[in-house]
Amino acid sequence: MVIPIKDERDNLQPLTNQLTKALGSLEPSHGAPFEILYVDDGSTDGSSALLDEIRLHTPEIRVIHFDRNHGQTAAFAAGFRHARGELIATLDGDLQYDPADISLLLPLTKDYDLVCGRRRQRLDTLIRRLSSRLAYLARNLILRDGIHDSGCSLKIFRRPVIERIPLFRNMHRFFPALARMHGFSVTEVPVQHFPRAHGHSKYGIGNRLFASLYDLLAVRWMQTRCLRHDIVHESTDSADTAPHDSP
Image (cartoon, rainbow, N blue to C red; front, side, top):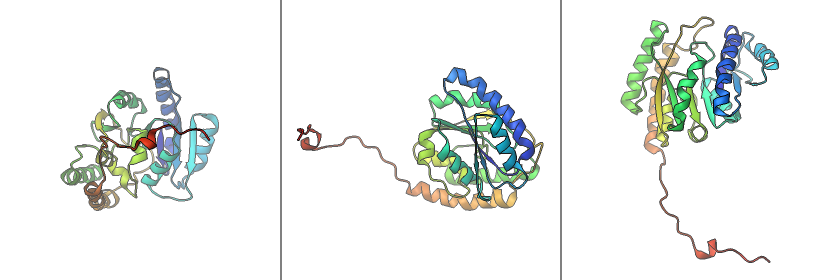
């Protein structure tokens, strides 16, 4: 589980409690241990120290600390590099999702490379809902990725996806489009959404709507230039395949 953290001190202990309970209940049926990898993206509210304290009492937790704020995509990228599982789930640290909903996504990983949550009912501010709606309309018009809620952070990736898709600043908004661009299968599952109880959102009209519209052009360019091919046959010389005599 990879979770970027930026100034979420009041959410960290409740989130950890929810995660260990939800993931612990899944472990016996799936036969593999779990890890929770927090990526501290330059927090300044005491989250960094609290993460280290929580880690001392929760063996499933690992913490990565950035030297300063580098952004959510950088946090995901660092978490992906350090994650050790074949299935990598992602989540925000704002307590707006129920970790128990991971159980809704997990069965579909047998048939899909990337399973994305889709918020049934957005419980955000009007500004966030409006900016997200406009960004969705523009993204669907340009990228045609067929995803209704690309901004939902609850996702489960199969490892080949995170090893293949390119990541640049702000590219976390386009995980489904980038996965499909490289031939991976993607689907959505309805999940719960809750209003933020502590802290404040890091996104608004400026860095959600305008930035994502700007980045659309970059993703569209990548779609048109992406190398995709299937090898149907490889011819080799007999000398290359014949066993060699020992010296």
